[in-house]
Length: 246
Ligand SMILES: CC(C)(C)c1cccc(C(=O)NCC2(NC(=O)c3cccc4nocc34)CCCCC2)c1
Image (cartoon, rainbow, N blue to C red):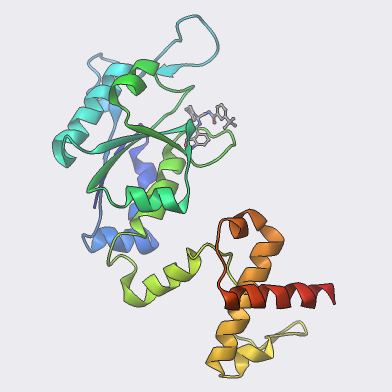
């Protein structure tokens, strides 16, 4: 899968291309990430990418032309059909389902805003969809684009490898994670739950599922509401509720 990014801070993307699962995916050639800097598509001596807002007001806006030419350069490499996504507070909030949808694309081009945003006419003429990673003020769209890219790259076949994709399934089966433990068996008087030391894999599976259901019920009932429960899951959640009510 091919990713193009338009950003005035190309070096930021080393956070994605040089580390961990996403870095290995790039090394293995499963994923490519190319960044185009709008500054390279300016025609003035000062390489101006921003200008003052019509109507006055504080701050600067990103000019249309450098962004347009940068997007065209990205499309020349990744294909003119590439979907162009603007990371923006106005966007549809990212969910795992949206990540799954984006992962079906052969190539994606992300535009990261800076300053106070971009000229509306660029959105009208070049942007296919807007995505937001949540409701808080950010300094730019780069980190948001990397969040989206991380969530999508994990879904590209072979990126996680067979066993790890099973782990992914447990993450994205719509429940919060169960508690996890590793050595030592006791830390500051707190022991690892006996069931996890029992070697009884069916009991361990049930315990983990019960904990995931219970934690989702306690911390994110909205996720639970979106998920149908099997008979077993319903029974385990009832048991969890009885346990916490003592
Ligand atoms: C009501 C709310 C959401 C708090 C809000 C309202 C108005 C402006 C902002 C804001 O942060 N403007 C700055 C700006 N943010 C983003 O790009 C951005 C923010 C949040 C999630 C994102 N996901 O993708 C991109 C995102 C970066 C600089 C270029 C202009 C956009 C925020």
